[in-house]
Amino acid sequence: MADVAAHITGTVWKILVEVGQRVAAGDTLVILESMKMEMPVETEGAGVVRELRCREAQSVNEGDVLVVVELE
Image 1 (cartoon, rainbow, N blue to C red):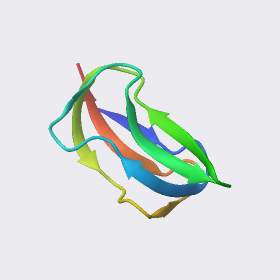
Image 2: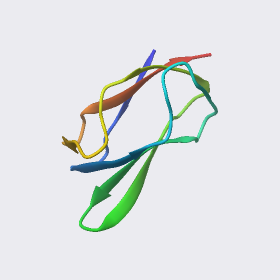
Image 3: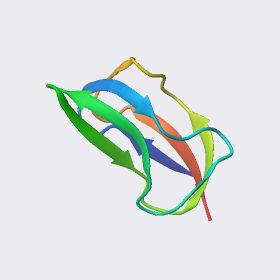
Image 4: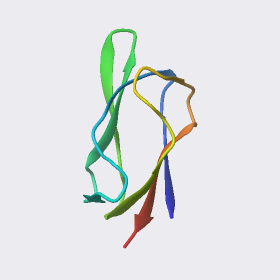
């Protein structure tokens, strides 16, 4: 399992995946908004989304786990 964490403090603008979805390395999972800039949060490896730990419009801090991916 791999925890995909926020790399900045901001707000979850959009969630692009759902539980059970297959993702490839480099896919954008979540888009964060901070200071009117959109910042993609990507997965480092291919796998399956097992858990979403955030919701749209939620405030998050740097290091908060947003998505859990089971790597292949």
